[in-house]
Amino acid sequence: MTHVSSVRSPLRRIIALFAVGALALSLSVTLTLTSAKHASALCLASKFAGTWRSSDDRLSRIDVWSGEDCGLYARAWSTCRNDSTRDCSWDSRSKKLQDTPDRNFRFFSYNWSNADEVLQLTLKSASNLSAFDHIDYTSGKKVSFTVSMTKDR
Image (cartoon, rainbow, N blue to C red):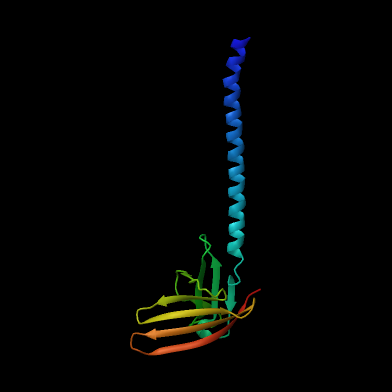
């Protein structure tokens, strides 16, 4: 009998080892999925995210969303010159909003062939945003304006 029990003992150890490994793997997967779900919820929690609109043709809309890296991305739009019922994107690529110590303030920029443009976004409330646009032309001319924007519902 001792011979049979000594054969079962290593088998029991191997089975127990596999069971503990499977349990640890299952717990690891559960924690990873829960953490990823929590992280994605934090990404979506930004007050900046959404579509912001104004009545100013120069900056008629700004779209802001969370990227896969949890960073905020934006795209600026103006009223189209040839069709005032539509908005035209400033660029086909999105721009990453730069973090600042002030959680209600973010900015992003465009570099054109004849100018550098910076948009500074300041949250006034959950549904109101102020967009300050500053343009430095290569000719030396500088243009700045501020637009009040309202969040789409």
